Length: 285
Image: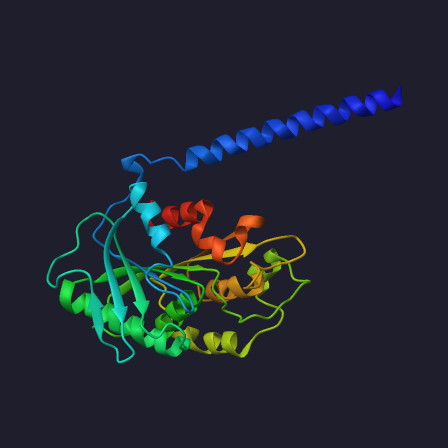
């Protein structure tokens, strides 16, 4: 009799879980449909997408095309900065950006150099946008090393009137605390207190954080592939979320999202539609 009762309870729970999963699947599918135009805030403020180590303008091309397909933005320009700091673009000078959430993919000719060079080249690119296209405001989206180079740029060049104001920065799988593995620290504790072990790089970010402007808001996106492996397979959770508590202490607006499971691998993050949704919500809604 007890065995039948347990079996009945088990089947009830199983059917309930299946029902929840189906409902979740339906909700996820609806989130990926083309959004209503009134939900999207359109402006002529460009969003600059920056690849990671050894990347190129193709690294985030799939992501920007998905945004364009859903009506969030328009792919407008590709830029490349040479080793000498020279700019080449796919858009004619003196053509103003339209009110269609323009997207720019920025690449570095030397894509394996350190973040200090890349921060300097971001400065060169943004200065070029202001001088040639009258751009006064931008958003930045950096994948992996592109995220830390963008953050270093913000800390290094805070008061230059020749540069556009950065409204928002999205960092996807960015190794702010290098690659230190801290297996015992949970995500909530990382957000509240910062990493238990701090790398020289993160210490440097802390020293430079006095230069950060409160006018820039942040979205940090991390990946955790399993309960045991608190990383995206490359960047540990304590690293991709490593500056969260630092920004909060400074009174700077910051949000975080962690992607879980097999599609939360480092390279998978830039192909993940859940990541797309978080970015679109942060930038254009």
